Amino acid sequence: MKKELHIFFTCLMFYTRIPCPKNIDHNPDYLNKATRYFPFIGWIVGTISFLAFYLFSLFLSIETAVILALITSVLTTGAFHEDGFADVCDGFGGGWTKEKILMIMKDSAIGAYGAIGLVLLFLAKFKLLSESISLFNNNIFLVFLLFISAHSLSRLAAISIIFTHEYSRDDASSKSKPIAKNYGWREIFGSFFFGLIPIFGLSYFNYKILFVLVPVFIMRYFLARYFQKWIDGYTGDCLGATQQVCEVIYYLSILFIWKFI
Figure 1 (cartoon, helix red, strand yellow):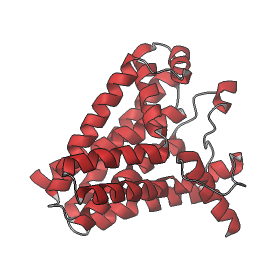
Figure 2: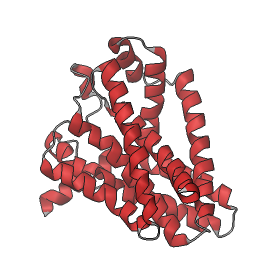
Figure 3: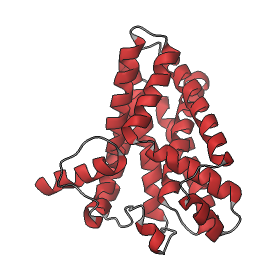
């Protein structure tokens, strides 16, 4: 049990800015095993974001509360996944070879592609999340499930790429951003368990919600295929970008399914 808690806190420390015990570090073995808890981090981030939304919605408009909830989410993770998304926009937008793409993604500076991508990303999140909340008639429990299912399912889509593809970097630069690269059945089971439970909970109120799995994992498939084509695998930035894109696809799919199916 003590070891499992250590693994969990390793995951929490790596993917969020939430304070963890001082003895937690980036131990490669624990980091690999922490994969099983990555979608569960979505539960935590989603809950914190939802609480911010709920509290602010008590005296502010829904739209303003959504903006503040998004800010809270970014602060909780330290913009970890958004940074990966921006790097991927810059790398794949400005690079035409594997080496060039990886070099651009490694650069900490943000370029035009990354800046434009982030603006469009947050506009999409704001609009789609606001409409989804209105769609649920502000049912607070459904909105809570919406938040945590979006974060957990998108993280499952991202981390599942580790199970099917190889890590792209093979030089010393890969050590600058440690990332889980190995896995076992516990990591696969844990990822899918924590990733799918919230969406099953939401589908209790409308079983058609389960159809959202199709577009999310179709997007995951094409992103992984795209990364494989250009850089022979994935990087941590690719996983962050996948999480962000799949989160947007999730909100979009919820709206489409609820209205038209």
